[in-house]
Image 1 (cartoon, helix red, strand yellow):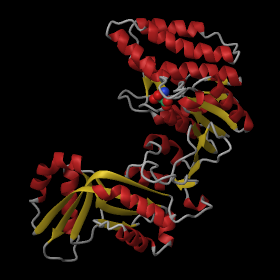
Image 2 (image 1 turned 180 degrees about the vertical axis):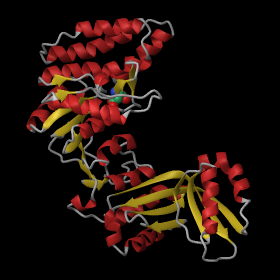
Image 3 (image 1 turned 135 degrees about the horizontal axis):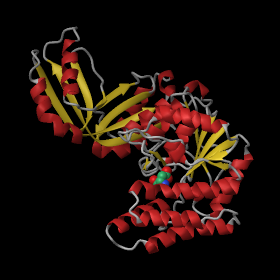
Image 4 (image 1 turned 120 degrees about the horizontal axis):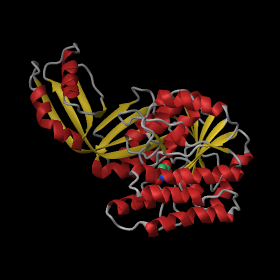
Length: 435
Ligand code: ASP
């Protein structure tokens, strides 16, 4: 069976609901559906979640939230009317308004967007409605409680054949509502896919999957047809906006693939994210390229080389003691290079310097700021011995100096460091070279 999550723009109005129904009924394996709250219908439109947060802040400031709430009500009532739904929404809306008047929490207010959309969609599809507050749990510290959720949710899913479970929220141990971070319906979808032991988690949105490069840098980049979770994570480290780690772990850890699809172009296969590269039919040299500015390259070099690892260990221990997060570590026994985020490093620089000065081995340290990290990702890279050569040549042709390059210690990526001002040109040159 398939768990399918539909984002806000996929459920923004009655016409979008119809598309969703067609998609759901086009494959009878789509048995559990996770809706977001209604998103934007056009460019300057409001997202219902934003309006709900606005109601909360207006109420808190002692202002009237009636106008804002009316707008929200209208969105849902219009959908229900246009789809001729049998559901009586008014009592739910009245209850929510009353809770708001009595000072309901921001989380409660925000969660009602998904709650109401879930009620509408369940009625429209004639699927059971399962309130997320009864099956998604947070612990005393406010962290997601995976164990409790998984066992309760699993049992609950056994009692239904088809169901709609609203995304984005769950409940605290005292029963009050808590929401995930913004965009959190993606997380709910992954959690439910895991509990349902789904064969596939579909994430329906308004784009046909991920692109091989940032379209603001490369004109018309190709879509990614297949990518592994690891490759996606690597692209994400260098700035690509793909799925958040929290939406990936519940499914990737149990081997469930994710398929990013477009509600407005359902015939497009979108991007398939799998655990294993062997599932990839088109074994392209690379899956994608991304780049991020704001790095510094730290080079810490022992003055007299020897073949022991103690220098590296001491440097890394100073790094760890100061909580410095590094993005990449191309190193040998006598030299440690660290690609670090400049902003975070500068906050810790003095204490790091104090710590590293305690090392009893003579060394030098240099810092190259304003470095961009570019990552070329794809398991195909290791099968292509000329890849690094091609990167060099492509960059050289554009007169771009390479500050650092490291091929695939993890066998799936090659990192290239260039000056920040050269990043866009370098990404274009690499993309063009390989495609
Ligand atoms: N409706 C929530 C938001 O706008 C959650 C979601 O759409 O995933 O952030």
